[in-house]
Length: 262
Picture 1: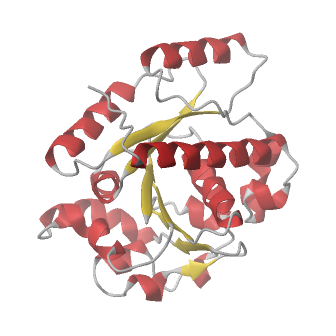
Picture 2 (picture 1 turned 135 degrees about the vertical axis):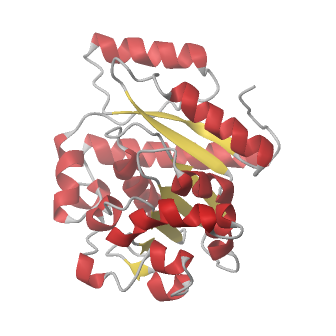
């Protein structure tokens, strides 16, 4: 089971869109995928067409032990893709989890004994307790970065959190890569950001970039991944390329080519 966290404490960088479409791309190649919606706003659940009334429970009910993972997981309109939805009460866990015994390992524990090929955590835009829990449960962190002026601001803090977790709680955690989102190739600033990211993190920047796209923005309001909403769109093609690149990279990393940030 490959477990990855999609994280960036900046909001609006395309985390949820990336989580939904990456999960869909993996499911399309016959992988059993579980997307765990860790954002109390529940955008990943809504974006996959799971209405509030269909959420029999969610992450909060599973981490508090009221329900099992199997009881709370919901299947989506995409074959092989399952969601552990988010409900409003999840916001309480940021306050409650630190007081629970082994609170840092709650998400790691709930995955024990399950047989998904991929588990993807979609995190809230903060480096709070839920994001830290997800990183402790994961082998990889994937960082979406919007190609804009202050893109790299906040990366220092994110990498500091990554190192702290890697050194103290989860030595298996690795940076899978940085993915540029909302990219407009005609924009000189976007190209400049790409060069800057590449100079700081040469091994970590994915070649695949997610373009700024109307279809990508429209898809969630229909409760569909863009790959289902409009499979031929540039956005869909970009996520398919990204999924292939990620699988290729995971294969390389699991054969011992570890990449670390000192």
